[in-house]
Image 1 (cartoon, rainbow, N blue to C red):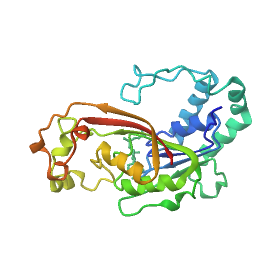
Image 2: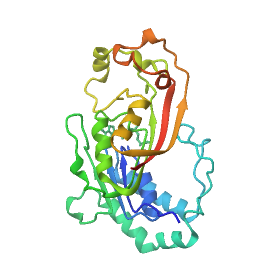
Image 3: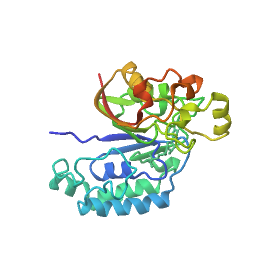
Length: 270
Ligand SMILES: C[S@@+](CC[C@H](N)C(=O)[O-])C[C@H]1O[C@@H](n2cnc3c(N)ncnc32)[C@H](O)[C@@H]1O
């Protein structure tokens, strides 16, 4: 029997808290969101919440590759997961007073004295200079996830170390990471050809850009923080650069890294 995570943390939710709200609507009790910039507005998320209630109530299928082709990982099965979220469980989760309580927590987001710990939106979290292990206590959450975020985090070592501290011993982390250039070059891997001084100018004063770390660095940090990888789905895309075109900092990239444009990873504490 699968135990649904009760306390969930998401890194970099962006403007939609939809992942966390769906988790709360399907049984989680607490959702913590950590971002470096405040993108999310209450009003927009209340609209998203109301739509999610209807989607869960009608056990709608998960939107697939046709609707969101850029969202990875692609799933084998997009049907509503009735085998995991039974009829009885969903009925309990969607009791009107429970739904109203979650909605209230969302309405009160950002009000210091609301006294409600159902949703916590922590901004700014982990800027370049400052890491923040103290945002959560040890083993506080059962699941930590992110979608297209870890390629942006400047201090990756701190992020993995904080996740290891926060994660319950029976929990898991789930991350989709995009190693492509994010519009900083013409070819998907062109960012690895940009010399450090030019990259600094390109970044300018932005709070984040991309950290240019390859797949192997994430796998190394997982291992050094005592995470065991359970699922590892790399996306292979042929490199467009010759070895000599790589900037000095990236000249030692392995062939495997140079041909890996994305990674989905699910890992557990060892
Ligand atoms: C490409 S957006 C992805 C947003 C959302 N997860 C999605 O899939 O639509 C990247 C997100 O990462 C966040 N981010 C960047 N650096 C971060 C950091 N150090 N810690 C947490 N979030 C960060 C950004 O603020 C932004 O919300």
